[in-house]
Image 1 (tube, one colour):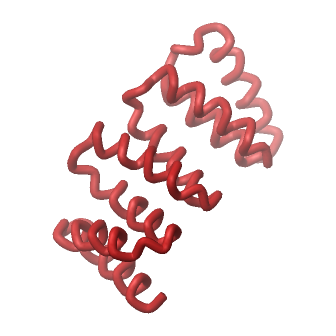
Image 2 (spheres, helix red, strand yellow; image 1 turned 90 degrees about the vertical axis):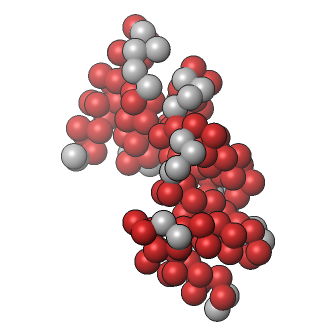
Length: 139
């Protein structure tokens, strides 16, 4: 999408949002993505936060916000969100990668290795687990 299309999408999403903020939890993710693309991630994050207050069981939203926090090096906030995802989805392998990355960012390598060892035992995540393990062992 071009910049103008993201701006038009934001206008349309905001019309839906203003009319019925509880319409759909994906609306908050879409608004964040659009605002992030046009260079206004803080404004998008504020809306995502509102969505997470409204939809407290929205694991995809918590995963996204945790990733945003990891990129911003706010690892402890990220870990809180990732733990919410784990509470909502007990077998989520994807979130464990991000938990390991948060611990690496905090330089808590023992905790990172615990998460990585869980990844290695899951067939769909074995390769990613080994890649993270090498990263931790050689940092």
